Length: 321
Image 1 (cartoon, rainbow, N blue to C red):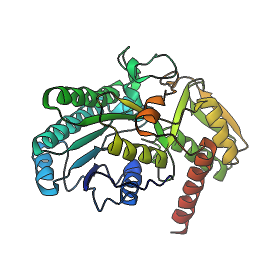
Image 2: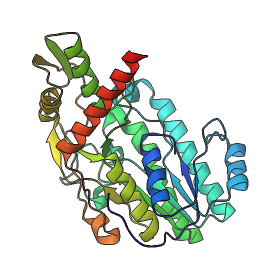
Image 3: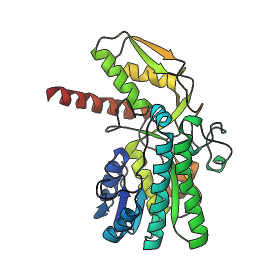
Image 4: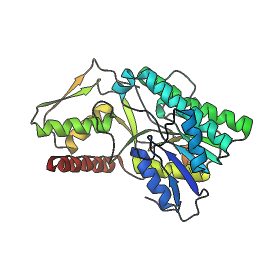
């Protein structure tokens, strides 16, 4: 990753969700920028859907910057099974945390939103100004709208209280350390696990959801962490900002690429009874480049190979146990 030889302007940084997939990379990136006090408490220490816990968090840790990553997330299946939980817990976490941060005098709040906040059908590439053109894709709308309210809150607080809250929208993330649980994983780890297990069992077919026609954009997790750090350092405006790679690939091509990289020789069968999700995703990433100089550095195939290699290493470690 690129190294920036500047003094990071915040000394005590709270990262919610700091033990998660993205959170671990973000904590590492902040420490690499010379931040000595990177605070990443666990859910057991402070439950962010409980107001007393959030207030105690502010009193105990006294951060001058909060980067709010914590979220209840999952793939299409998890979103369909938990719409109420995904809406409520994500909404409550964001609302209470930003309000208590404002009242506690935290200098800056970086809210991490989601690409699921965009309308189901929107011009390609997705531009931040098109965020309100329609309703999100139905399978993840409760999650997407809950996270979208962080933008409304941030803009409202800036208007009324002159509070420095900013809102970032990362596209789908991937990389080593991703969630490979089949009940809640996103498309890349789900495919990797399917093909690796099919190869190990000498199965002749792998079933993939939908018809393969939707497209997605993916951002390597370490690139995303760097983008967030740059925004935390340099961006102090009200408008939302996309974080992406600018690379678009169809689910069909992605599935075939994962099959090739995992050396699966069998047939791919498309289960068209399963939902496709949003038809296309590709971001306009010009705002991030303009305002804080962010551009993704990791090519998709390189990042995918590293993710597969990590998963295979974990499988080997598990089998040795």
